[in-house]
Length: 509
Image (tube, rainbow, N blue to C red; front, top):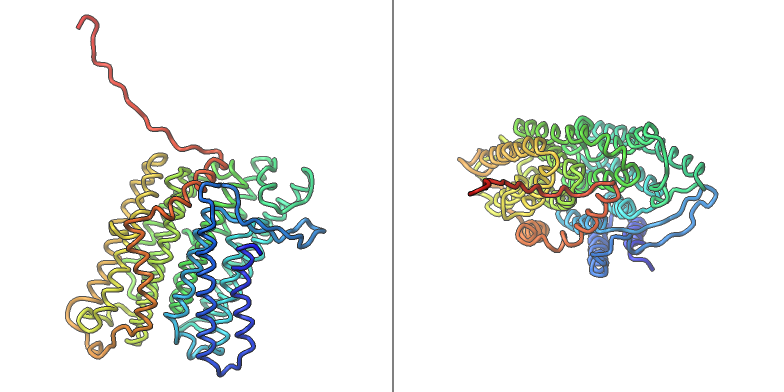
């Protein structure tokens, strides 16, 4: 059986087993969820060892006729970019389960329901990254909303119901625009040889510039909401603030990558001319996202909202790298997606543990934690340094590639975006100084440090951040061929270096 099919079926099988358990079997439900996610991670790693990194064609391809009347197939296949994102989601899932061992307690529904939603969501994530039929992609894209909605609304805190509804409405609006564009592609395919939703066939359609621009916007707006990119970002701070830490990790660390992945796989491939037309506008939005997200992060008083606004800035860098239309930029953007997933996971998980112990996520309620809880404090410090792209940690490599790749084609945008690095130092170092250093804030004296389970959960996340900071080649070797192929499909080539020649010799000398 196909690797991708197996990956998608394992979480579903785990969810089915959980559904048969009594509601009171909470510990067993947790263990089954952990074993299931570990199995998915193992299969994903095994699949990665079989991936041919120099082959730019889709791999592990499988296609079954699904709705033949409309030419819809259950078709899957991945390139290097999709492989990296599937690895990201597969590796983070067991971390979320282990780190959030007690997150479901006090939720609106049972503990087993919480883990059923997590496993169903994992299947949807694998499906959305591996689908090669546009209609199938849309089904997974929209189906992801259901478990996330219930995870936020059922197991979050504060104004969780309002945050869940806001997330759902924004996503549905974007999904409807994309559905209209998909229908437009389907009609065009019927006029040019036969109705199909196959992405390879749709990429060869002929269409007027107006039609292509409108269809491009239908896809791009949906992806910009999901990413999110300014000004489509407003649902994210509320969702991150209300969701449980584990849900926030999946939301910002994995689900939001669907938006930037869609920009690469669908916007650039299906609408190359429109991508060129809108690139200056999108570059502008990306730069605004970088600066806007960073500046608002500086003023946040709550850890969760701080991390949410930093992510808006980070997604600005990712979008900038994608539409720089260079191999370096797009390779950096893809690596950024992976690295951001782990750095955000570390930040949210440690911040969640801090908030659970203190009963608050307000930054001013913390102080002097390095004396009371040194392991927890230094774990947050390490994650924060990764978020601001400190050299030697994983985010630095990806951010550097994005800026270099952008500078070769859009130097002004790259220079302005680089200012976001300065702002990053402020929005990370200021809360670290307030929460970890200085005198111990009253009420923090008896806080407990990380227990064994929490140490086991955070250790691999921090290890990945450190290892990829010094040795990103395993991922870049997979990403680079796919990124170069994506750029060529969009009709771009990397800018050639300019060589200035100076002739100073004079005749007769």
